[in-house]
Image (cartoon, rainbow, N blue to C red; front, side, top):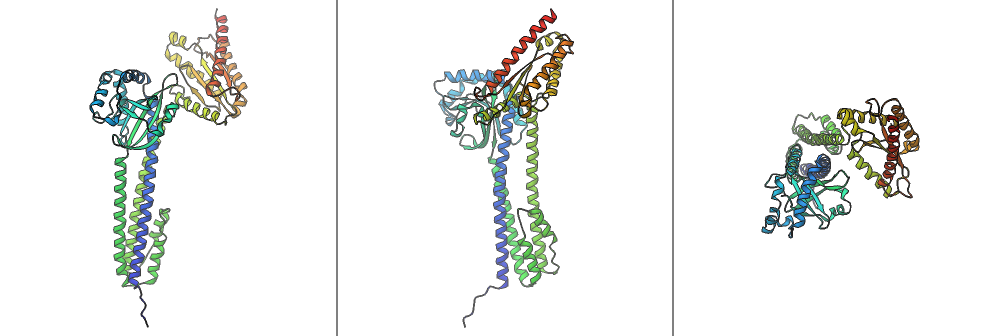
Length: 494
């Protein structure tokens, strides 16, 4: 009779432990590789978008326009305009040399100081730079770069727009949402660019930031390699211990060990950790040692998971701080109302609803404080600020459930939707009544008085194509009201 080939218990145990260890290593490696990579990418995208938007809001637009005007005049007059692909060539050096005088401009020096302060406050940041786009050539031109002098893009340096960024030519307000590039000139970067607006709400340029991904990816790769080595080494140790255990086979403890090992669930590490903590094998031999080794392995992996989780919590805290700074930028420091930047985003959202046919009802209330200049001239700017704060208080009391924006020195806008839109006329009359009551009691320039004109514009889908059309109605109505009030005030005073 032919003898059947059999696996010994030792061989079966070795195979079982090896397969388990290999699966554990593969699952852990796959999970951590994808998880770390995706979270790192998303985190850096959010940081880049938030930082570029914050920089665009706080940058001095007058200085930016002054530098841009000077650079544009030199750029437009240049016959040859080599791209940064030719960095260091004779032709490129001759081109950028034309912009040396820009570095001596006080406006350029102030902008450079400002972006360097922001860059220094963000340790993981590669650089912040300011640029504008030449739509005719589909390129952007650098004005200021916070990078060290030897690495900074010089004033006038030209980069071609990537194909996926050319939408900014037709829609400047789109900006440059965060994206990853890897180029010979600048390396592996996460880049984001936010539009810079002038006083006329026109996009004049972009505030951009770069986060270098090379160091992050290198550290990430090293962490994965270390994890693999650790898990592989642990697998080898477990296999060796398994060979010893076979010599003192104890079926029930072995099944208990196998059951606990099979309960390993990387998606629920706390439950897994609890299961391993409960594992007890009191055989007082190598099998008991194996149980301790497996518990140590799980404990170390659990600790690694905790450390990674803690790192992400720290990153989330940093992101919360960035959001806090952004929230400050979204509110007017004097009145506490929503700021001009928040107003611009509201306009974008409304225009999007109009374009997609989603907007049905919208009211815009335009409010302007009367005699602010006279109050400032005759009573001082503190009195002017008090008048603005007092008016903002009245607006908040009347339009309690609607977003209120301070869009200029003495200009306020209220957006009416839902129930507020339905009660729009009533709210407007309540506001006028409050103002008229104050005007009837006090002189128009009395510190106790508040004089303001209001106009209401309502969206009509048959005649309004965008937000500006509705705003124009409210603005016109406000100025008609202002004229009536000033004529009335003139009659009272004279």
